[in-house]
Length: 515
Image 1 (cartoon, helix red, strand yellow):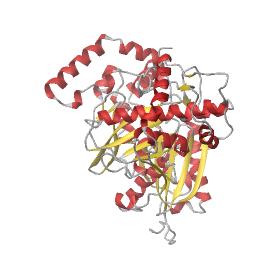
Image 2 (spheres, helix red, strand yellow):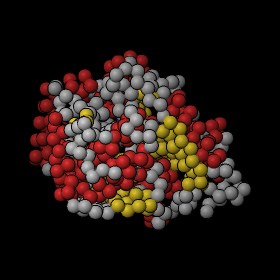
Image 3 (cartoon, rainbow, N blue to C red):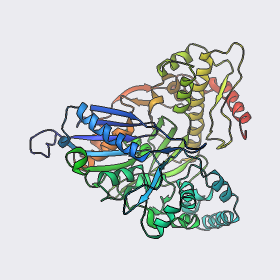
Image 4 (cartoon, one colour):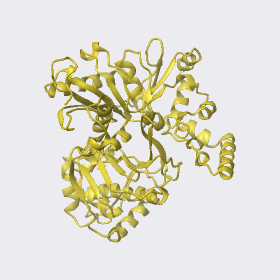
């Protein structure tokens, strides 16, 4: 074990922080990747108008600093024993601020925010976008280069950072004025926290966070000038992009009492991928938290956007650049939390037992508010097939079945579109603790699914990346030996046994479209 910087001979540890959509979590890890201390604080979202979702930057900063201090204290350690800090953050949530004063122009605008809907509809109907689409189609036809195959900005959506940033420039005059004077900074959560930790001396992000915005072009590895020109967003506002595992500088000593090296910035899903040790092409990660995310390591091959899937940079460490293909679905953890709020059950731990207490959902189907197969913003969340005999158990089972059915949909798209043999699936996130969902998903995809002992993979991934940069761990082979698997779910039923229920569910989805 490396010894302390203070010269006291104390052992060193690494801190991994995950700044998520619902909570800020911090874990202190020793060299065996065992958790020595933890802390968690709830993230309070703000809803100033219908469809708007924001975060208070000062509140988030206080929560971030607070969990680090609490976790280190809980571990019985001194701050000088922290060898490195790794930060994993929710993706695409962003803020802009004045470069000279450091004052934000607005709250964080969440990745869940829908304020750009009118702007999105206007752009998607525009003749200019149609002309650009034709140009890229022709270029792809003659060159065969996937770089020209359906670039992500040829169809805008409310989830894209670019459209919300365009909204900011159109509706907050101070932002445009500052940008014209080269005094405007744009940053995702990682960039803002780094800026605050270093008292404004470091303005940067990493490749995983940059590529997750949709403004950063993964093929060329630079901010997309074509997109920014289309939306009248100046290129001067973007931060320099650094390696994921990298010395970003140190936290100012006034914050924690000693300067703590900041050795990794990483987007949450990519961080979970790293924490699961999905280091090889074909490795698959399934995260089921607030939303659901399937990620496939595609190695050095970057697959262009295809139906339901999109390319990302997983991480960059030195000369190594690892690409991922991702598919996502919303309303997993949020749906289960909603069901608890309306008293369908008392504890989340009950739900698997409730679902297994009956043979089926009695034809009851639950349709969440968004489907990866339809991608319809007007889809209506609903229960269908209710009967006088329907009980809470049927409703809970229908909700859990909808998670497994959507996993099956997305997995089938991945198998069809990603031309890489898929390995064992590794699951994490709060919903991965639900044995009913995990077993049903394993049955439906006919694949073994591993669940680790610690499901907070985003924190662990950030810690792994920071530990590699600081020398606490030597290489990824050493990290793989630290993996601890708690449960392995293997297929037990033939997929055909689920076909009638899934067909009924698919019919319910069709009835909920374009509400």
